[in-house]
Length: 94
View 1 (cartoon, rainbow, N blue to C red):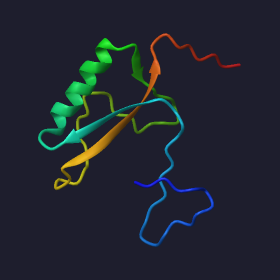
View 2 (spheres, rainbow, N blue to C red):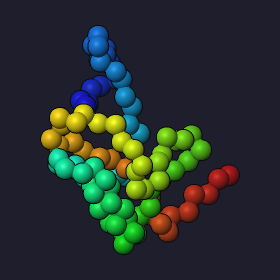
View 3 (cartoon, helix red, strand yellow):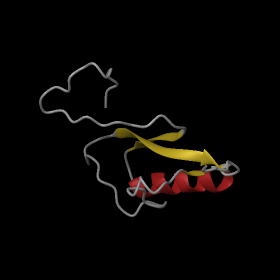
View 4 (cartoon, rainbow, N blue to C red):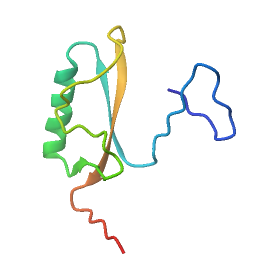
């Protein structure tokens, strides 16, 4: 994944992926069991003041612990980013 400006064209063979500006829990999975990594994420969330952010227009969210995950099996390390929001934050719709 690479950050590019909006003016740059997406090279052939690449896919444009827009990540919304939010607060994210960012952690790294470094080999071994992906399930164990997500269990650690879930444990951290339980004792933090944050919860995963969800909305009607984000139907792809899978409640923790993740039941399946597609990733390159030969990847030794990759980042996991989960949008989060403070548990006490109230969204007011007008």
